[in-house]
Amino acid sequence: MKNNKAVITATVNQNYNDSDILVYATLSVIHKPMWKIHIKYKEFNFYPNKKFIFQDGLWQLSMYLDIPREELSFDVNNNPPDELENEFGLETCNEFRTHLSSYLSRTPIYYTILIDNNNIVASDVTELAKHLSKSGANVIMKLTSPTNFLKSKNL
Image 1 (tube, rainbow, N blue to C red):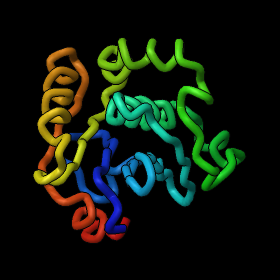
Image 2: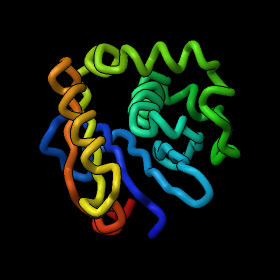
Image 3: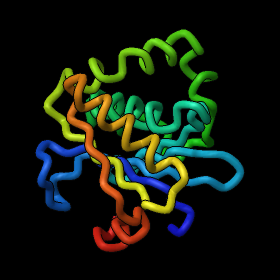
Image 4: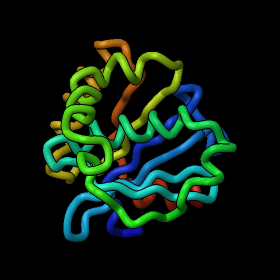
C-alpha cells in the first residue's frame, strides 16, 4: 500500500461515507505510473500516458461506472496492465482527454482526487480539478495521504 501516490474516488454525493464509494482507483508508481480501478472484488489495471496521468485516471474510472455490474462480472479480473493508448488508440484517448469535463459532467457523480501535499504534481492536479470543476464536472482535490485514507477505510 505504501506505493500509492494518489486515489480517486467516485461517489453519489460530495460528503460521503465509506458505503457511498461506488468505485475508486489507486495510482502506484514502481517502474512507471499505473492505475488500478477497484470495483467490488475486481481490479482493472492500466498504464496512463505520463502527460495525462490524472485525466486518464478520471476518464477510465468514469467509464467503468458506465459498465453494467452484470457485464463486469465477465471481465478479466486483475489483468496485466496495458498502455491506455494501445487499448483504445491515440485518437480516442485524445478525444476523451480534450472533452473530459463534458464527459465527467454528464452524470451526477462526484470525483475526489486524494494526493499527498508532498507529491510533486499536487499543484498540477489542483489546477486540473479547478479547470474541470469550472467546466461543470464534479471534481475536487484533497491534500491528504492516500495510504492513510486507504488504511482508514479498510479499502
